[in-house]
Image (tube, helix red, strand yellow):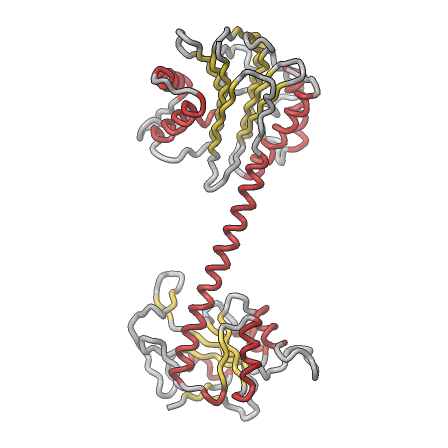
Length: 429
C-alpha cells in the first residue's frame, strides 16, 4: 500500500523505518551504502516538494534487499538545505517548485540549478508533470541523473530509479575525480620536468648522466637539485645540492638555488664568491630561518685534467680512474652548509683528475639508506665499495647510476625516505 510521507515533524518515524507497511530489516546487497566504519546503511531520499494538499504520497520504497528507503520531506529549499546532511543519498525534486528570487518568466529549471549548486555530491531525480516530459529531459541535460513523471510513479519504478541515480552519480563522480587526477598529474609532470635542468655542455667532450628519485610519494621533484654548464672559456661547471626537508617548499627552494647558480656561473662567479651569493639567495627565499642547504660545486678546466672543488656541508664526490680503485675526493676543507653561518667562507681545493676519469656527485640520500633490517646505514664507505664492484662489472654512465640507486633501494628493504640525486661526468682518454 502507498506510504504517506509525513511533514517535517514526523521525519524521525519515517527514517527509522516504522512508517505504515514498511519492513524494518533486510540483508546486505550490492545496492547498500556503507558508513565510514564499514557498516551497511539504508538509502535516504530527500523529497523537495510543496504540495498545497498538505500531504505528498509516495509509493512504498524498498531497496533490493527489501529494506526501506528512508524519506525526508522539505517544503522549500530553506528546509531542504537544513535536512541535506551527509547521510542523504538522493534528492527527488519537484521542478514546479520556485527557486529563491525567481519571478514569472524566469528560467524554468532555476530550482534544479540551485539544488545542483547546493548539493553537488548528491544524486538528483527531477519530478515533473506527465505532459511536461520535455522539461524532464532538459533537466537531465542540465545535470539531473534522471527524471520521473508524477502520474506514472509506482514503488518499484521509483525505488529502482533512486538506486540507479545513486550509482550513476557515484560512477560520474569517480570518473570525474579520475579525469581531474589525470589532468593534475599531467600538469604536475610537465611542471616538474620543466623545472629539472637541461645540461649546457655544447662543445664539451665530457659525457653526462644523471638519476633523480624524490622521496615524496608520487612526486617528480624533491629538495635535491643539480646542474651542469659549460662557460665560454671551455670550463665545465657541475653542481649538486640538497635542501633540508622533503616537501614542495623545499623543492621550490632547490629550483631557485639551481637557477641562481646557473645564472651566477654564466656571469663568471666561482668558488667562495659564488657560494656566498647563493647563501644570500637562500636567506632571502627560505620560509624559516632554520632551513639550510648543502652544496658541492666542481669546475673542470678546459683541458679536462684538473678541477676546483668547493664543499658546503656536502659529501665529497667519488673519482674513478682506470687501473685505480675509486675513491672520494679530499674533504678536509669542507665549509658549512649554506644558511647556517653568516659571513662563512668556502675554500676552493685544486684536484688532479688525469687524462681519463669518471666523477660522481651525489646527495646524502644515496648513503643514508639502511643496510638490512638493522639500524646500520650504507654510509660513504659502503657506497664506495658498491660503486667499485659495479665498475669492475663493466657498468658505466646511465647504467652505473641506475644500478647504484636500485641497489641502495634494495639494501634499504624498500623505498628510500630521502631524495636521491646522482650525476656522473666521464672523460675518455
